[in-house]
Length: 101
Image (tube, rainbow, N blue to C red; front, side, top):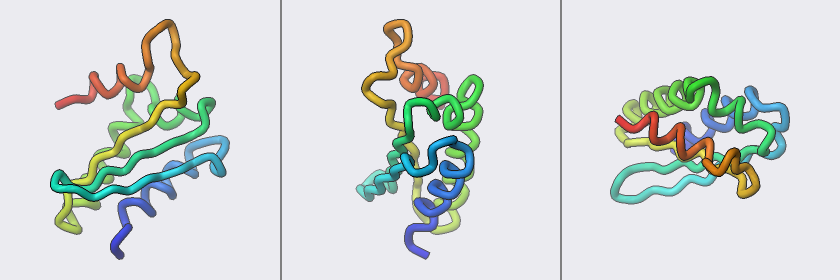
């Protein structure tokens, strides 16, 4: 199953958002591994990111496990909708900074 990571991400995302038809996933492979870019409706960003980024962190952990099983490094980028700036700071950018290891 070549795209197991993408299929799993789609399953998870569509089951935690209110608008599953807006879920879009882009998959790219380069020398760094697999990059999955997740796009959801602006109203669903809170569901995907979770409190203090815990949901996003959990999804990334699951994807890393799937990647390890298939001998690949899998990274997740959650793309924030253009019009979702809150207080001048992008919410997802803050979460990404918090999650950097």
